Image 1: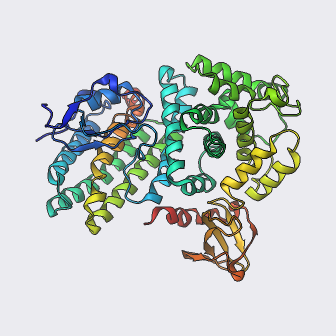
Image 2 (image 1 turned 135 degrees about the vertical axis):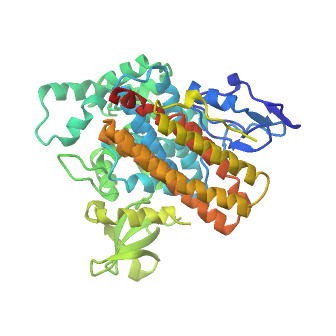
Image 3 (image 1 turned 45 degrees about the horizontal axis):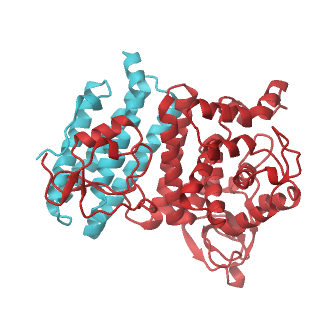
Length: 384
Length: 136
């Protein structure tokens, strides 16, 4: 196809797998095919794109720092929430393919694609991204735990002022830090009996196993491998595998350690129920005081809020509500009630002003008691 | 004008699904022609309605087929979830047609082409091929 005036053909080498397109791509007639930021994961997908005639506008200026979200969207709120639905599927598929040994060279680009999308979704709409994961009770622990840890790494890293590019390796570490346990994770998720000696040993060495597996899959970045190996090290030297302490533990590793602990606490485990986020935060502060970096914990709490989006809370008027958005006042986020004071679910959630005394937030309630409402609640993020 | 054509490398090794994918691509072509440079015309709306209807039937057929082929339950659930995400986005675009917002409509082709053709047909759908082949 001959390009239209003002457009030039893209060569296959211009498209880097697993990375967002720095420019929009058009077909030969000038019709928009892919928005900037779309991620091509495999060589086959790239070939399809090239075969269909792939052009960029001469007027396009590459914007690698903040390309738009790689998804068609008609509403800003909608896209980050939806994007995390897709990310859950993509990470699950990546893990499944890895477990079946079907990945090889594709592992790294896939994880990089997911990491970039997390960064974009968080930049675009952190509230929806947080809510999606807090409201998920269907996906496996492995998927949600890794996604949540990765997202927290991104949010804390950003708060610390780490530049976009430098935060990516840490997001990738968050996405893969427990890869050494993936093959036994399903069993661990169901097991109520005490760990067997073999399982205990596997858990103790999983940071090293994860590092070895990632290196075998082609990961070379030290900034990715290092936090994975050391995410169970503790500042007071009580951690593993190397018993490092204090300054020997790098900042990115400390961030991943906190993200890992928090995201494990807020999920159901076979041996205990999920903690509500306020309880997890308090526990982190009190019990981990000397072991983790309390400055970073404070930063995380400030960033995601005392009542993070997706959290379920009881209001002073007796209603149960879900947090939709953080506001500048962390005690008074924007909420929607979905269960009346008499315990009956509402067909349509109603916005409440938590700054008003009657609708003040009294505390958090576990979402597990209200799982039946998940469809209604997700609708809050789907509707325009 | 045919912008996109079904190609043998898109094949999922099932003649009927391949036929349906080719038909979907044909509808996307027609829609692209109707949309080109314009807002939501009646013609574009008609083709889009056809697409929305066709895809529902196609997804149901595909899900049934992969279930019969012994595709693992968790992967079927995952595949269905991806279908549902696409269907939800199709519904969003139905609303866009109603509202007649030409700017929002510009996102339609990147959605159909990127999320659907490149990621789904040339990505996710390929993953069930070994099960279809084994089930023969």
